[in-house]
Picture 1: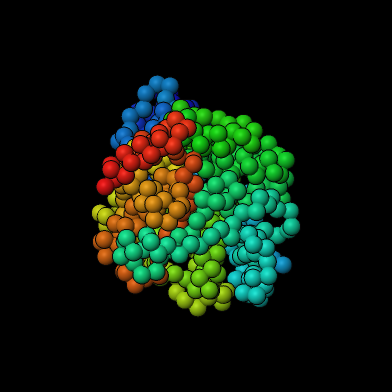
Picture 2 (picture 1 turned 60 degrees about the vertical axis):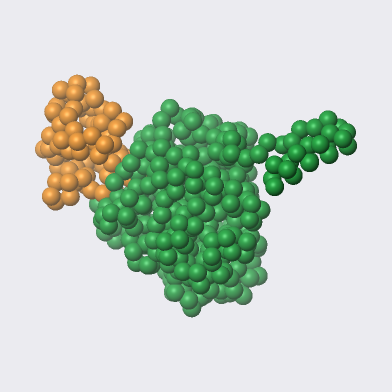
Length: 91
Length: 413
């Protein structure tokens, strides 16, 4: 189940400058584990020590905030896109 | 004079230079402008402010601008109106309305945009952009026109006509996205990463948000250099609410006022009330919601500053209320009927919640209270169109008038 993970600009220095990476994972949690293995330092920016997503980070699967689905247990399917976006809104 | 030390992460405190940055590399927290308040205190005074222009620029010493290249539409120094009629209806002794519906693009957004667009020019950007629930798009397009630069503004496709026209008239590139504001915002974060544009509320957000402090500065000055006892303001992203608090506290910090910062109460629409729900449930965190409200200006399901708003409400001793669509419309009408001010749905939310907060005893009758009216009624006409009387149409004769008038008098009796 390869999914495309879109990496926000502030984190690209940790993914060798790549703005999109392909990951094989059945859930968002597993996806973050794969990213942690491939790119040291990445997961610490996204998650707290206890594994929960940091308050200022939004994760979307196919454009939908995972908090409206099953959070980190949200399942991923072939061809899904996962966006990691720092929370900065207002307008 | 370097009053601005740089940017600082609101969460972990890490420092950054004063560039077009908005996110902490370490913890992903939001960055904020970091002032040298001793330097500000040394240069600021009531007399100097009073001698300044009748606009937001009189407060330049408290704003993150370091040269004279500003984009000036004449924003700010809007009326602070004593609302005795509305006060009497609500049972308050001293109520004021800060009427920001009369700014150049008809909302309070001209304040943060004046700062952001000025900084954008200073940083050398050639395009202004934003994700908007409507008013921001109007303001960015207007400022871009004035500055002679390009604008690309993004809105949800289902916004009110007044907002669409009110942005399109300045000839930006206007992108209407099939989605809600949170979708637009997410998209714009991705576009901002790639296009090198000045997204006023994304990559220029630390500077942008500072403009809203002027709403606190002006109220304090207009009240004779004191803070009100109680403030009611709407929450969309929560930026305005947090900057009002910062503004009143800064005035005290630099010696311009002696009074403590006000109790801060927040207003949200029931159909998009993530902060209200967290407040009501005593929750520590704000959970995103899916918006469904006529108050489209406030339809932000995932407010970036929601958590800080909760803390400010608690710390200041304020409260929070939420208004239904029907209550919002009645709020708009109540304000128009009692004080002659026509506000948009966000203002209707504020007035409706002001009423609820008084009824709940959260606002005491003796408190000097200020309610912030953030936008103009002509922006959201659709909300009230079906709820107000139609004109009485007559032939151009005295008989026709008399008949119609008599009928109306009978109907009203």
